[in-house]
Structures are given as C-alpha cells and as structure tokens.
Length: 117
Image (cartoon, rainbow, N blue to C red; front, side, top):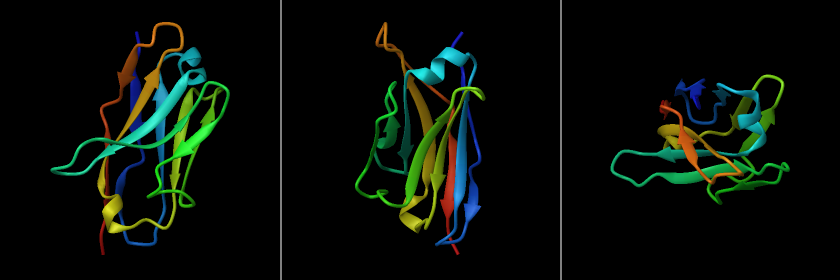
C-alpha cells in the first residue's frame, strides 16, 4: 500500500523558514521520482520542486535559491526546506511519488503553509 504523509506546515512570518517532511509507507518509494506541489486558494496546483530517482533536482523559478528538496532513503522521507518565505508562498503543499516501473502517481493529503505577519 502506498501512503505519503506530509508534516511540518504551519504559520510563519515573512522571511522565516519551515521544513516540510513527506514520509512514505515503504522504503522503496522514496527512491522513485518525488515532488512537492502547492495549491493556493483559487489557483491551480503547481510544481514547486522535484527530485529524480538519480537525485537530479529541479525547482520552480519562484522558489529557486530559497527552497531545497532532499531525500533520506533510510528515513523513507523527502524534505522541502523553505527559507526566506513570502506571503505568496502560502498554500497547501502536497507530496507526490511517481513509480518508475508503472508510471503510477500517488499523493499525500497535504499540509498547510501560511506566511503572514
């Protein structure tokens, strides 16, 4: 069974930092392509960052230099370190895994990030 559980969201002031975690139910999951998306109210879900099965990372232009995606296979967890947060980063953040063999994708339930003074 594939399960992804996000955590680490919350309320933070502009300029602050948060680290999101996405823990997978099975160790092998995190060795596949993993990604963080976000969806703000009234907007479409957008890709924030992803990490391939071989460790290649990509970022949305809006978060380059501020966010870092990383994975810890031993802990079955993918992280999103978010620094210099801005109000426009406010959204529900979702973790996604795409299995290399089948191409199937699975999503976590999301975690709310609010950047406000």
